Length: 580
Image (cartoon, rainbow, N blue to C red):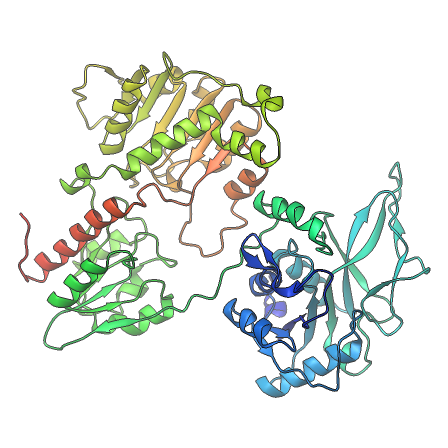
């Protein structure tokens, strides 16, 4: 996105009147557990070029729903402007002017989004707005490719919504056989402010177009289309991920005269431990808080019990805002969300689970890892998907796999998880070979290799379970994949930065590797991961399973880890309660 585009004020408008329905209670009709309206709100909020999102409605329930999902509302709308099934330019014009008066600003452009098209997402909206901001462009209309030609459609002379008409408004794509056509789909209509406010038109004399795929353009115009739309959404054909706007509650327990501990790890499911923390220290529970909120709290903090997956990096510029900070404790073995080098230089203690006795009592990550291995090897995820698609044994050739018995499990990194996976594999009567230059493996059923290459060449399934540090960052190169047996399975539950992800995708795509499973990806601290290459590949390829870094996500393991982290804080603050 260019800086010249980013400075524009752009309003996204979603018209959602009550009673204007193709299906009963249209805006609020559930689609995968969210109201239809929420999917369009999500697209508007995710568009980087949209500065304000307004839902216009005459329904109190729709207005509240819109607010729940993070949109502003213009409600009640002036009664003298009643909606019809074909929205008028005057309705949109009035919306813009009303909203400008409320917000005390002047918009440069407006984009109208139909609530009927839940697969159109923020990236599509941004493409339309990028084109709109080009010199000489007054309006942009989204179109889709059809073959054979669609029913004739046109745009109202005043720039209104798409309506059936005998005037042809689609264009043949030259060179295609059979011919294909482009037709407006109603998903996106972007225009300069002067066009709608001064000329009372939506599209002007020469609108430009942005092409959406037919799937992104699917509109919910009847109950029968909802199962198909839900299937497309479930299979990742849209980047939309609606969620109610989280109300982050900053909970303070301050008595004074005690050290202040900032807690940003999720403890909503550990009420007893929350109470115990509040009894011992002054504390602020701020799970889900954004970086700016944390910035405001840090100057007064003595210790930080942090989330292992914060939506920001705990880097030097952030940590230096806490002059009283004595320790950062993370309830995880990994610590790549913390600038360890900066902490070392500043003498700031960092406590994590790596190489502690506590970590050996936690089994969640090992159990989950074995579940991933079974999922990919036996194609369990594909079998579940086929049943949802109404198939049964008629697709058995896609689902036929191999036994674990007699196959070779290769393990790189024989720590807690590597050792547990070896035991699980032994129970399945697998051959096991492992490489770890820092360990002497005691188990007689494990062959200890003298090089990683030996493991790669023998393994039918390869597990990467090493700690991320300067020696392991980028350790798994393209040469590693090339050295693996054709048809082998690759599993990474360490950190995304350890492997060459681009090379992994190439070796999955060319079939050298038959499958892979990842519980981690690179750059996890980024809040918007939808365009991450690994996730984009996984949406359209069944030989890659990705889970959202949840291997350790159990009540049992998280309690043990959080207790370890808080005990470390107590020791550093010299408040006793040392379990050792």
